[in-house]
Amino acid sequence: MSDAQRVSSGSTLTSVNVMSSGDFDDASILGLKTKRAWTDKGESFSPRDIDDSEKRRQMRLSCGLWDDDLNDLIIVPEGQSNGTRKPARAHFKLKSGEPRTPIHRDSADPTHNDAVNELQSRLAADGTSLQIMSKGRDANRKHIRTQLWAQHSLSKYTWHKEPGTRLLMECGDFIQPDIVGVDTTRMNRTARNPMVIIEVVHHHWPERATFLHLKTLSKMNCIVVFYFVKKGLSENSFANALKLDGVKNTLTAATFLIGGDFMHEGEVVQDSINSDDDYIKFNELAGAAAEKSFNEQAAKDKANAKAKAMAEAQANGNVK
Picture 1 (cartoon, rainbow, N blue to C red):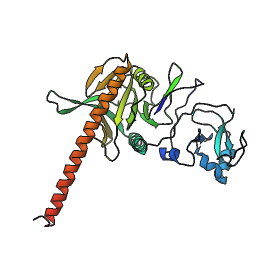
Picture 2: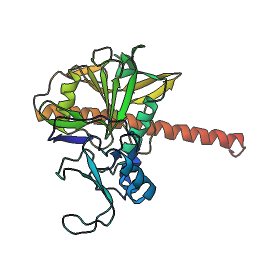
Picture 3: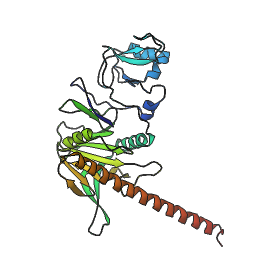
Picture 4: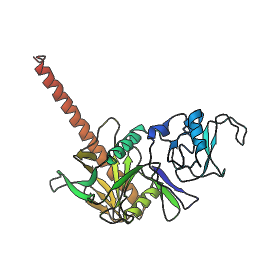
């Protein structure tokens, strides 16, 4: 997720992302500010498509080309000189020629990206609904799960992933969550149909400024879920998981922002953030709990693999 950044315009667009993060990670377009252009028919093209004569013709036949924020674009073919007279890769350029803040950073974290793609794809599956469960512990420290929210039968949620998730804040900053879900049947947001934000955490906890913006959103009927992942491990049933039962997705997590509160393992940790110490404490608390859960999972997987190997050996008569 991008850190909180300043935008120059008050307009923003949340677009349906039809390209995977792998397209954005392609070495041929890394470093380019605009990695996608839209035609008036809703078709999307990458800078790579400029070198394809047929696709370039389709783009030129469009009544215009726009980026994710509806800024007008022009096509710059490969090798065409720019203002510095240096050869350029094929790319899209703002029609005005004025610089703007990039809305998507090149990502070098495939574990994070793969998790975002997988979650968004499963959430967006036709006919599915969602319930969110908060993982906690009882008086005996045993794992328990409590329903935090369930999608209403009259709601229909659409799920977007970055870079189509940019949210403009009152101060002029914007944040770009990993995944955002909104009820498309009505404009208003209530406790029954909140906006749902999912932040996938691999190595990096959100920057403090971004975290504060997420906290603000959580006061306005928005549930923020922190979903931890670890390379080499599947979904963690202790920390977080997304399971499908029939047509209902169940998202289980241990750490949330809801109603302006930081909730961890079923309890409100503190109702406000007044210093960097609080922010750091939340980071360390959530990260340590997730790491413990992943270590428990790794140990359990190892024990299961050993037991399976032993059973197979006994079945084959290889155990003396």
